[in-house]
Image (cartoon, rainbow, N blue to C red):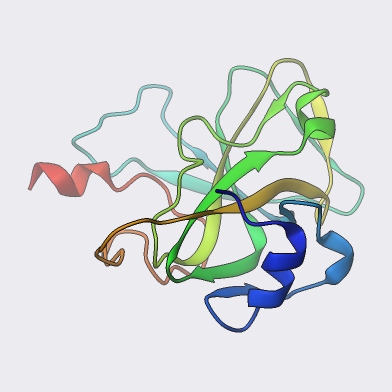
Length: 172
């Protein structure tokens, strides 16, 4: 079952934290998260799963930044979220998708107990100018049945910003 927007609002400060929280971003069954002004791109044209790939940081100016097709951009949400006893999920807003922008390649599924900013895996099908603080995606919550363990991965938990892939750590 997915939580309603009213239930999300009711649980803020308990098993759901969204910081900063703004009730204007609440939907009937989700909450809109905004795009931070930071972006990260990989420097090499060929990435290697076994290695820590080099990245560069960019800042999205208020006047906008043009995304180019065929390039992966890592972004992050303005909001930090924490969830206990629920499974957080992330999807792009339909208005964003209708512009040919994807906000995640495969990482829309969160873990119970996740605490941090969401890293967005952004790509576009045609050139698109983006702006900071736009409501880019929505978080929604599923109930979790049965006993469970809480997400404790040292890779991405309690992050302070954009997280490039740390898959190379799995090869050690």
